[in-house]
Image (cartoon, rainbow, N blue to C red; front, side, top):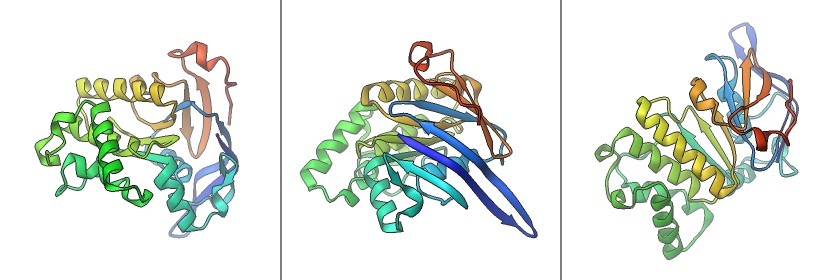
Length: 239
């Protein structure tokens, strides 16, 4: 479970101080799926980076399962990200000279697993996203949707507890976007993930348990009508 208390992240732009996130109090329970919407430049990606330990708040605390991320050293954060948090990005971020399988397996190297276990988990992850037959293909030999599936497999091969997705359908056409979202929803259910997804698309956000609107660094959360039964157990939080 994530617990954010009075989190503020300020940036300096010339002589001006810009609050990307301000006075944020938020709880994200285990198994929750929170979608964050808002205009560009209003703090969505900053929030995701804070949750992933890729950025540090100017003030306030961020806890994941009782660990205060703001007090961890970089080496500790690296270990946490390697084992507990999966990332999916709009631009896929695949290594163009590596095959699909090698891109996925690379995520396991920091965990110190043996070769056989890495290969087993890589094959399993690619199968879970429907790409067993594309394991030896380079990214340039895959469609945009297939590349994003590889990126999702790379995020999930670590068997993380949390999945953070930043505009995961932003570079895809409408039909492919629907396929990727159906896949993410399936994996969220099957793996019991806690998922936070940033998106501009209302059709994408509506799949989540909760939807948050972010404006000028502030967050207002509303329940999704897509999952009323599961959402009923989680109180809406005006932030």
